[in-house]
View 1 (cartoon, rainbow, N blue to C red):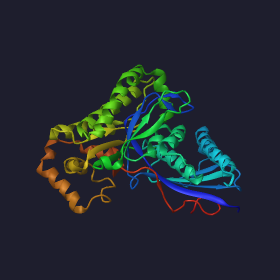
View 2: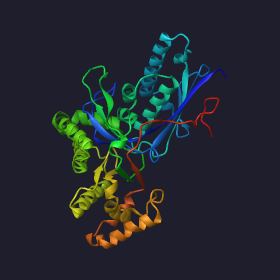
View 3: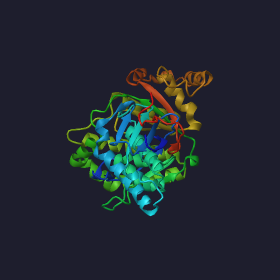
View 4: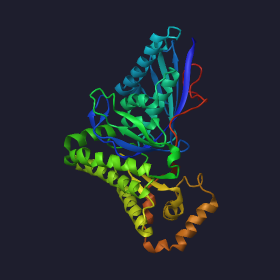
Length: 398
């Protein structure tokens, strides 16, 4: 085999607190509104991607979670992303004749998620972020993350936000070519490291309505949608950035929950209506408001992407308050023991007893609608790793 170039990257999931929903240009993935997200820790949710370029390869190929994905390999989204990256490499080669002309080579890509794919857990965001950063490293490109975010956006809109850690904004931009539609850091990870998240996976199955088709239907048929993008989101965008800068959790939580509600209201207002939340999701919403009312302060916020899974944001200082409810109700799910000691878990239960929370007649049946709990926190952006998923021949390692 001739010479090869390889690179390996991990990239995070991000969960929007101010939702992106609706495209003004479907081919370039240009959004109808700006959005804000929290990047989650890769120890808990990540995509690992390795790529190899070789003059011997006859076409671009991609393997996802152990299986070759022919549909995605040939998709317009992936083709567009790879073409943009290869063009950047070609321009670099044109300026430096000593560089090998790998921009004309095909690439093999192997990608693995450590969480359910296409179940409303932002798998495409982490996937395309990992792919773009991995190929950029492979091609030894000099572009910064904001510049690369414009390419990641073409693969999956929300992927552009996964190129940064901490708290991230996707500025919608206004130019027709999309050159100003990009991700920027609002605040780094170390600005508000106390931010944690509890993901209650309400259903890990593939969604009935994909985000792409759901967006198109909403833009076309929802009466509420126009008011959301014209008035609600622009004002909320500035307020949410300020809440993050000021570390004002009460405001952050209120804006996050209201925007989740607004997003799902436009889905429901679509015709025919789109239901991403299910009965379990609705019970979790009710539970969160009950918890905040019980303590007479905002200790937790919910948000739901295009799926039924609840992402609960809270500050580390309020962990005992929140988990006295959550652990007591969801203790039978997998995921607790990896984050807490037996002593800590017993403390949650004893606090549940001392607060007499059983007298609230909590709906303990809610756990039946959930499959697992993922406990995580705000985390870093893409990371370079040494271990490769690709063998010397350019195929997935067994």
